[in-house]
Structure formats: C-alpha cells, structure tokens
Image 1 (cartoon, rainbow, N blue to C red):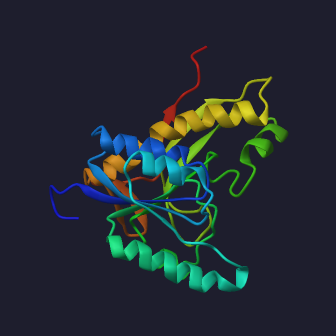
Image 2 (cartoon, rainbow, N blue to C red):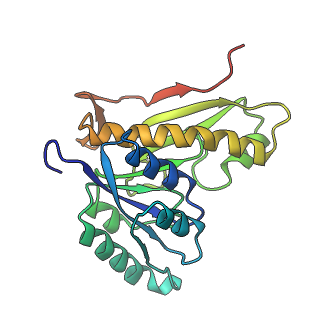
Length: 221
C-alpha cells in the first residue's frame, strides 16, 4: 500500500454478507479510501456472492471440503488472496477458524467483527448467551485477527442496551445495525494510515490503544 494510493481490500464471507455489503458500499461512496478487489466465500450458496456481483465486485469460491482438507483449503484461500495482493482483509461473517500459520501470513492487516463486547462472549451464539445472563448491555467489536480466537486487539466497539423484551432476533438486528457503522469506520482509519498494527497491538494516530474506542448507541435516558 503506497502512500496516497487507495487501499486494496479483500472480504471473506460465508453467508448473506450484510457487513460485506456495508463495507463495499462505503468504499464505493468514498467513506473508505479503498477498492474492494475481491469477495471470497467458502460456500458457493452464500447469498453474499450474488450481492457482491450486483455491486460489480469480482468473487471467488474456495470450498471448505472435509475436515481432513483443512490445510488444502487454507492453501487455496491464501493463494486466492495473494493473487490479489490485498492491503487489508476483512472477515465479514466468515465462519471458519483459521490456523495460526494462516493468520501469521496476513498478521496486522486482517480484521474481524464479533457480535459481543470482547473479551466477553467469545465464540458462537452471543446474543442468546447475553440474554440468558440477563446482561443490560451488548454490542460488537472490530479487532485485528490473531491466532487466538476472537482474541486480537480490539479497535472499536459499539454498545447497545438490552431491552427487557428483547429476543435473540431483535437483539441481533440491533447489534448488526451498529456493525455496519463501526466496521467501515475501522477500515477507513486503516486506509487513512491512522490505524496500524505495531508491537502486537493496535495503534491509532500514533498512540497505542490500551482499551478499545467505544461508540455508544444506547438511547439517552
């Protein structure tokens, strides 16, 4: 990524790709100084593949295969990515745990969004678990990807209130609305060279982020 050049972005998906669409549209409207070079899915039937094509973005399918094919899958995925030479990679609902070796290839330029206020509620079914625990706050976290699952340095979080009558579906929808705001924001910072990976941490505007930035989406009392 040379100075002044638009960032070249690759996006990885497994499903309908709502975050992918939000990111791609933010690139197209100039919110992110980047070009979405490719959208890669590990599932041919992922709805996001058609959405990307409608936006004029090249797509590729790298099928997962069986568990025994994990190494071959990652090699094929890495080759597809490296053919594009992306400056940044955004995991956007990519339901695949990547090996430490794969992560090391792209360390410092690969991002993920997770639907919880990390480090709380790593893993799956976060909305269900938040409701079961009677939490009053929930949200999403954009973080650098490291070998530790959902454990990389968090850059930006959204915070929403959990309503007494929330269901898993209503809470998920409210959190996802904020995801479509904070994920493009983090990628915009990276494209502007304001955000960087340094010394195993996230740095913004020349300062190490000791705690994530939090954007509050709770309704005022």
